[in-house]
Amino acid sequence: MQSSIGTVEAERINTVIIGGGQAGLSVAYHLAKRGRAFVILERHARIGDSWRTRWDSLRLFSSARFDGLVGMPFPAPRRSFPTKNEMADYLEAYAVHFKFPVRTGTAVDRVWRDGDRYLVQAGDQLIETENVVIAMASYQAPRIPAFASSLSTDIVQMHSTGYRNLAQLRAGAVLIVGSGNSGAEIGAEIARSGRPTFISGRSTGEVPFNPNTAIAHRVLTPLLFRIVFHRVLTVDTPMGRKIRPKMIGVGTPLIRTKERDLLAAGATRVPRTVGVRDGKPVIDDGRVLDVANVIWCTGFHPGLSWLDLPIFDSAGEPRQKRGIVLSEPGVFFVGQHFQYAMSSTMIHGVGRDAEFIASEVMARLPAPVINPGVLSNRQTRASQSRTPGAVAGT
Image 1 (cartoon, rainbow, N blue to C red):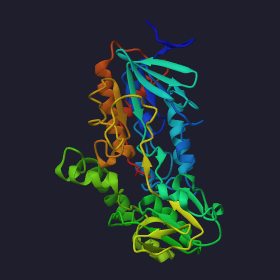
Image 2 (cartoon, rainbow, N blue to C red):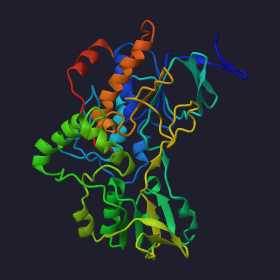
Image 3 (cartoon, one colour):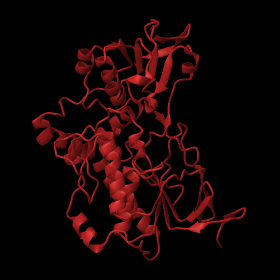
Image 4 (cartoon, rainbow, N blue to C red):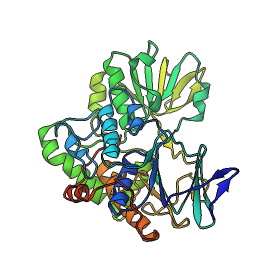
């Protein structure tokens, strides 16, 4: 019997992919190649908007040689570093090229179990499905410390997700709270403008080479992304299991902007920010910083409050093993931070995870139901001859 809520009848679709970024598109590719019916629900108005809304100067950490999803190379010079908009446009073109069934501007409000199936509600749409793939990174809801509300209203403050360029800032000093890749990139840009810039927090470490050099392009970057991040640092290796909590709790090493770059740009490293005194930020050594701006590069919550299923641990993280939620057959994740490997949020890593989850979905579905126009035989044969590239998580 078809489910309904009020007067809304549920549409029946075998698999619902929530998220139309690199994770969702990778899952779609592997399901389409196997001839399975699905739909992609993307909350933004366009595929790629999650990239378009980031800070203006953002470029990928890996060159275009490594930035293509499976079946479609990135259309840029191999040694160039794509901008955020180029990456966004590529993802949009990828979805169009393979004619994926995408519904943009469709934010999911709730997912819950109904007997042996799941219901997905998105506005006035209701979908009944056997499989739900949450294809989203762990970076959905900004994490800002509670004491931020005590800062003076004279101080401009924003999360890194709200920062676009220097024009948003007041004249005066800037405090960057958090020293991962986003904090380092934004901090270096601001420091180079001549503003007094403080970088607060512990270092997350850094890769020991400059990714812009010729030897890095030829040897070191492939070694780092394809071997270390992809094969060595996984949940199946002792080293990967040891480093995983640090990567999730502290952040990934700095890839492009290094500590020396921050200092050369004029930034000042200070201890972590611990509170507020007289409306101004206080750092761990007791000093009060007289700043006009604070940018919180303090990470994210999973942002999965709409997922009405008992699958979360005490920290709010989904309980899953390589993307499979054992307590809820038919619920899967792709794109979570260190889901299987450190590369799980990178394009070459998310592709592997997506293929694995697509195989799990296939094992649960009955006879194939072809999506008309999705992945012709010619396209499938061509894509199987290519290897997916890599992109650093940003």
